Length: 353
Image (tube, rainbow, N blue to C red; front, side, top):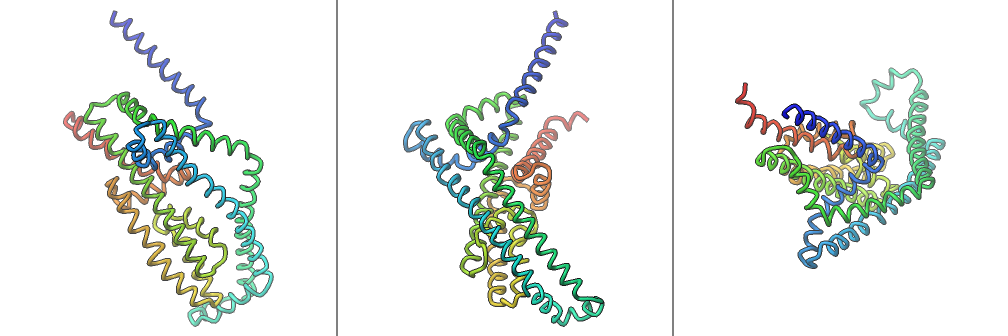
């Protein structure tokens, strides 16, 4: 009888794993849609709870929250995408005209006029090589940026139906995740084969990590992107939307963050003898744009996850490398989960040595 039960158990788990594998294959094309729907649900769940307290109906609260998410995310995203492509192409054309004119020559002369550059200048047999190198570098980089933008615009045009379908699926899934979020959470919680106190530790850590990273990183990135865009706009610098979006993206990069955008542009302004704007951008970039990261992120992420700052940076950087944009969220979560499992091991199994 025991042997028969063992065979039945082996067959059950083999069949169970096989079915899970097939389900993963079936739903893998929608993995990104499910992930972003889950991210949106988690980010806006406090709003859902607020609506639920008022209307006392899960369907109505989920619908109102989903509608707010749609208005807050979809139209601005489409607006930013269309204007971003336009400003990138304009930047490319201006850079090409600048290089073909006397712009690079002016920058070269400015660089060569610096006292600290005199020794380097003496070691360069032909300064035209430097001019040619910088011209090619600027043209190549702007060409790559324009090519990237036009390629993505082409992809958007070609796959407009697929994009709209994915947006539709994301909205629908977000509605159901909001409405049935507690049931889904409880189902996964009960299904996890751990002791009750261990489950509480693991799920509490994961919840804190997602809460801190999702809300913290999103709020930080949006804040820095807005600050950079407004700074470029009020200083009358070119393509404020482009550089605001670039700051939004680069704010996820550990250590350099938003300075990846405003520091090189500050040097450009100095080299083109726009000193007042350069000084203004350097001051605002240091004490407003970049400082906001140091104020917001430790409060919203570090306090929630209890991860040391250097590990948080490595987790985000490694997550970006391993999973792309989603790695910004997954990296810190896996680190948090690792420490939770270490604690469970110490409590449950370390005495077995």
